[in-house]
Length: 274
Image 1 (cartoon, one colour):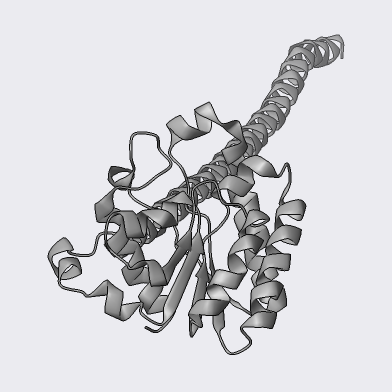
Image 2: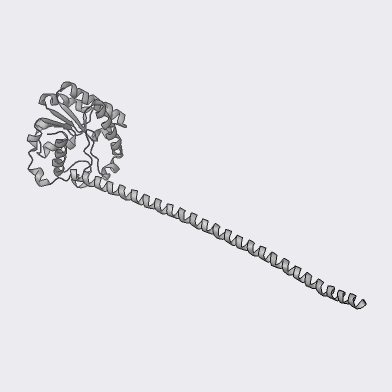
């Protein structure tokens, strides 16, 4: 009996440590799996997060690249438009000089009178037009031009082209006063020559050296905008003569060389259907 009990004790003593060890191993294995699963899930989540971050970054970079391309495309297109416009504008004033020489401008403008200042006066000084087609004097402003209306009326032109503004830029501090003066002149001519068609040209720009010497020339664009609006209100035709290539200017940056006038007259003739 005692031997059996001793055997049982021995078995229990041996089994208990084994059970404890087995239990510990089981716990360790289970925890290890949990930890492994947790680590795997964390790794997967981190990978997914990284993938999402990479995708978002790629999208952002893609959008940014597209926007850059759009900006470049717009800038390129605008540059091309500006280039075409500049070439077209320059072409207006770069008509072949040989063909200009063949045109009889005195005959072409025989029923038209061009009013203006020294810029216009040069048409007769260079012998391009006769005095019966030009009523212009050095320093003339729209206010002073009222003295020339009677001369215009005596010539009875079918068309009158007014080219004032250069001296008005120096006379008037703002476009409002300039427009009031020009409006008075236009209405005066219109009332006395009701059958004559009146045209008003934009003020041709001056060169930078002239602006530096006389800063008032900086108002030219504002004056032209106001002038176009006036013509619309009075229902008369506004001739936008644009710009002139710098090679056609005298050294003062204001007045024009002789070879500029046939080009300008061609434009006027076209606009006035001469």
